[in-house]
Image (cartoon, rainbow, N blue to C red):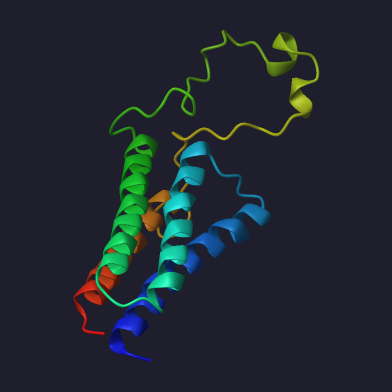
Length: 156
């Protein structure tokens, strides 16, 4: 295995680990919000790019892997800011608990309380060491960008 292949393996494997972790914690009951789901797509792309880049020489695919990991980091940073009230998030997944004037889901639509709870993107829920999953995704994805860049610069 070349140094370039090793770096690609680490970078794509890192995305695979982050994606597997997200699905694992979802299986344990940590329901994802819409922005959490958005952050998964770039990791899936990075995994696919890595699988191809192991067999195709050149810097183009590792550069695309860096772009995918950077996108995941950017989405994670945006989500982190929404969670910490640094800026507003999309109205589709943020909300004010009093916006319905105290009405419950059942008052608006009978049987609504039987549906799964909607997870809002602006809910701050520390996960590990006072950081949320979005915070960790930002940090770790930014690290993966460095592996992808190193792979792009490495000689085959």
